[in-house]
Length: 77
Image (cartoon, rainbow, N blue to C red; front, top):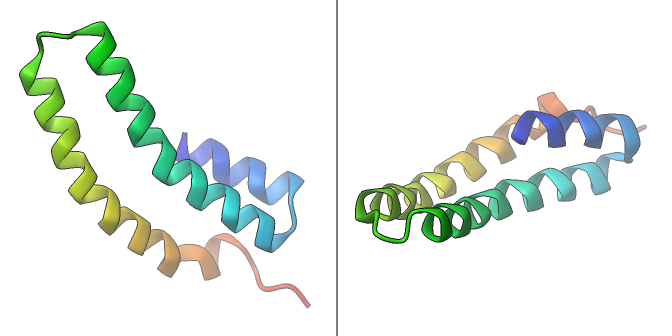
């Protein structure tokens, strides 16, 4: 999902809109994963626990994404 959003952002959007799209999909995909897992496996406590832990990891991934932005999206101008 992340790679697809980067590719789409680089091909179809300007730099600012592309960065916004990648950051938006980065934070939304984990919420969608939680909804799918909990609706598919309602009695799976382990799956819910793993996704809850993933929320902690998501913040670090978002920070890495901010640092990688200068390499993923070249500066305009």
